Image (cartoon, rainbow, N blue to C red; front, top):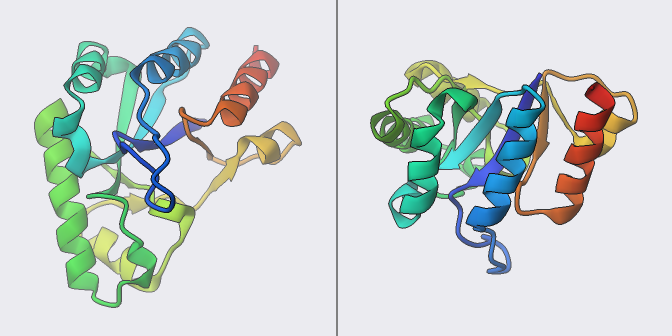
Length: 171
């Protein structure tokens, strides 16, 4: 089971400017996941890594408790991009930053808004990323849907409540 935390390092909502980044909430959610014996999969917006040194340090200090994936350079809507080469360049740039900062190999791409296109699949294949297709949210998981990945956002209080319920069910 992959517990995928989307929009990690993203400071604010790309749609309405609401604040997303909250270091204390991130730590709380990570401690829940690690305490239940799961790896915390990070879907990272790579452009903002330098903006959040405290979070970067926290993750580096506990690197073995995480898995790392690309969520984009920023939070681009790649599904609307028609040029596979441009998608590949942006994703490769993000992948390279994550790998260099955290000294890990990145194998996953988790697209923003969970939207896909053939160009995205082709771009991922070109740069050696796997695009996650087998996912659900906690509402679905708690109702019995079984997928490889459960997607959530650490900054969303209702999703964190569902995460806690899910982790209690798994014990």
